[in-house]
Image 1 (cartoon, rainbow, N blue to C red):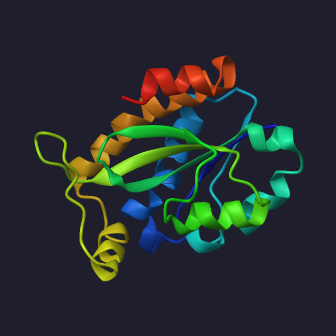
Image 2 (image 1 turned 180 degrees about the vertical axis):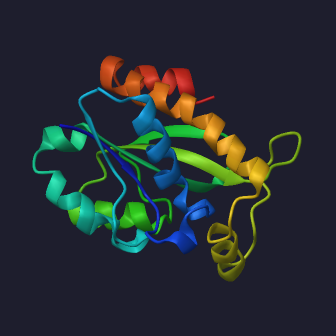
Length: 176
């Protein structure tokens, strides 16, 4: 089974927050990839417990290889994506929970940039744990949300490429 997981928090109060970028995008790409043999989930657990929702769906090494986790990345500029494989959580609690539950880092991730950037592309992220939390749990401004919605086409194409041509091909096309 091919599985695409969108990380975020359940509940209306989190709906359009930066930390819900994975949920937002998976909801959008699910419509674009209708009819394909892919299961899309947005866990009903909170971010820090994402592994509890994912673990029952990943029973074999093949399931692990066919899983893509989509989530927000404060280290990337808004509108950028980065596909990675077999990496640490990078401090992302949702990914950390999945790694802990599956006892493996060997799965694909599509990281979605949520931070503002200078015209030269230098990320301007908040400093300090409290400021980072406030930023991530803050709602997207309307133009930012439009950027995320436009990005759904690229993310859908990346998911299709991963499942049809492999992760290396997808990385070479989408990691710029």
